[in-house]
Length: 458
Ligand SMILES: [Zn+2]
Image (cartoon, rainbow, N blue to C red):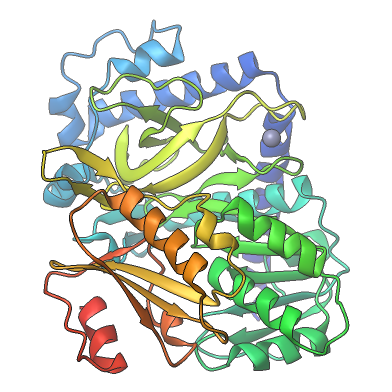
């Protein structure tokens, strides 16, 4: 490694740790101080955007009293909402490249196709990645993780790592243990469970679906009980039932997060409660109703996110397409706003025959407590609602009846519920997990499993 590289690496380490310290200070600040910080940062990005970003020069033309605004809510509500569609269609008018920066430092990230037409977001990589790493370390500290403990990953990984050093940013805070990862696509659940007992991690990076399957496999196995301190989950919605199951079976706590391709981290797990805290260091989250008015605590609404530091492509009041609800202020002294939970995506909605728009969500649904259900997926076909499921032991009449009632209640559509038992256990990891899928064909009971899967993932 050349000297320049090591100087660069040391500089980066210093910057990330300084940022982390600022974030930790903000995590200890009063609500008024957090609000004041958000207001100042918002003024900064709004003024910059009006001046430099063609889209905002137009859309914010009538917003003239940015400097004098003294309420965060008032300033936010004077700004228009940016829809996903607008961001998709106006990419060229939404970014700014500083003349003094390396062009290669500007990167474009796109949302995955599973959320509809992808949205591309430009970021200034050196700043974005430093802030991302600083938030990782902030979260690590707030959830009191110990860098000398064992970390294992069971995720979708291209190459499995065997005893590999952890690297930045955890190496910045003295993590010296090696790390092993296993691919959830290449390994079966019994294999992963064996690996879990062999590796004995203190912290396991995993998704919600595999967490559930591991817990159920452990219950059915002859393995002695095993304690894992924390399950660090991403990408699936975490229900209270799953938290309870992971606590029962592995004596572990689920540490969740809410993130997206557009923004990176959006909210982090509270170290004490099941709710999440908005990353006030880096963005503002609003929850609004269909008229754009702020929702009360506990009332679900659309999530608007404002990124405070993405000067390459400012996203101001961006409608990310999720439904969530704000919570009461937290009693732990961490004053970043509380999200009780993120309950679904706008795309997870249906219009009933009488024209009613319904968000269909299975958050906190009773059927998730049915431990016989190793895995399931709900698919809305044109002619029926299909409940694809995997079990070792067939569901009994009561269980089927309960599931059927929940599905009828959630969709309120005049369609039959079809139960389709799946032969294999690994089909679910093939997709990005969704609340439920919509298929644009009729369901045909004569399809074999491969045909059915291909219809859903089209
Ligand atoms: Zn909290």
